[in-house]
Image (tube, rainbow, N blue to C red):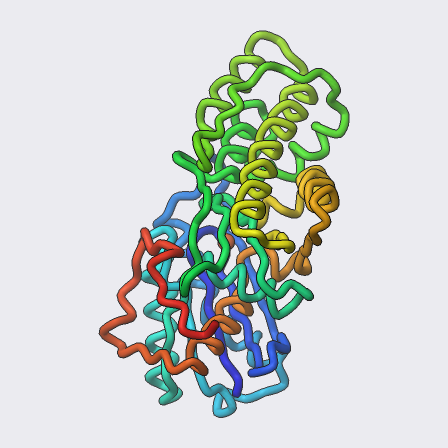
Length: 326
Ligand code: FE2
């Protein structure tokens, strides 16, 4: 079985082709980059609409297959930005109808976990999912992927992007903040915001910008933000692992490329006698292959979606999905 998956929840549009064993035959990705400011949802959707058809052709070419070999079409049903989701869903419906194959709508957050499970040795991990729009600690328990902790306001990547803009590092600031943080050494006072098992990042952003406006070095501001926020993520992840007695931690999302975050989580895992897994970069970030693979496991477990049920859901919760494949 060959599945073509389309991702388009935020700034990335991606088309992946995966077989029933989880082999990734193609994984094409393009990212919308605003000239200034953050993501404008309609502009991102226009970008995806322009790039989707070429990416579908590119993915089929790179896979060595032809369109008639595709058995299933999947797409990111949510959560995400409405205009982007609707654009990608429209493309997926058109492709499903023209090829005469079934369509499955996939929860984006769960797909980060499923691609990690098939592509690493992780069997039953706690997922630390840290990206622009999403920050969640997820694990399987009692028939569902449950959220054990999450952001109460903005995603950590969103916060880092806003910080980058405010202190002059430009858009897509994560890698620039990581580089600057490596030169920092002074730990500035920031509000460490873990509330129960949840986290909040917007107050840290406000406090970090205030430090910069008072003349603190960019390097020290970045260092302090990383140390504080990554400690929060690591703490919540560790508490989830302890609570449900899991011995594996899987990383997913764009922010987990940060080596300082990986080091903190790795040290935590090692101290607990647990293991950390990080998928390859192109499978960690938003991509079509993770959507395709999750669609395959869903379809193989008997899940069928009618065209009418492919309406997108901007607030599609991880724990809304009945996990029939585990
Ligand atoms: Fe994501």
